[in-house]
Image (cartoon, rainbow, N blue to C red):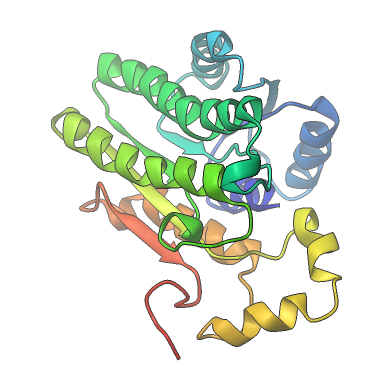
Length: 239
């Protein structure tokens, strides 16, 4: 979905990549797709961010394999659709551990290297439009975790600006990916969303990936601590 498209867009910009997931099969497939077009380094690494003790070794290994680290994209996420009175607290903890704590630890471990290397770098966190709006569809834990990401980005940007590290957050709207195929197949579901989005369509993964490229590159060299909405105007405009 979004993560794979981000990797492809960064590859188009000739970035060498470490791609991370919980399943090696998905990573090998993505690597093959990228290598069909590009002669760059694409290094698959398996890691479950819920197990936070694995994160320092993940970053250390990525740095060693790449020979450096300039850009980090935090894109891992999990969700359970449960209303406030029905939240399974184990699910709540898992969402917070992956969506928020995992982002923090990946960013912090990457920043340690960037600071030691004295070259700086850029960190882009992937948030959600649900961090800006209240919804009644069982998103209480997920929305809360994503709102935390927005503030995490601002605080880390403030702490690390004098180290040459920029931290920004890209906020996708409802994006058409394989993960939501079943939802979009429900009668009227897609049409209802398109009706309330001012641009009257869902996001494509490449819309999000292009925003990430902007934030990851020198095109946004004077931008840090920002949240960039890619949501067709949903959270800011009411038509």
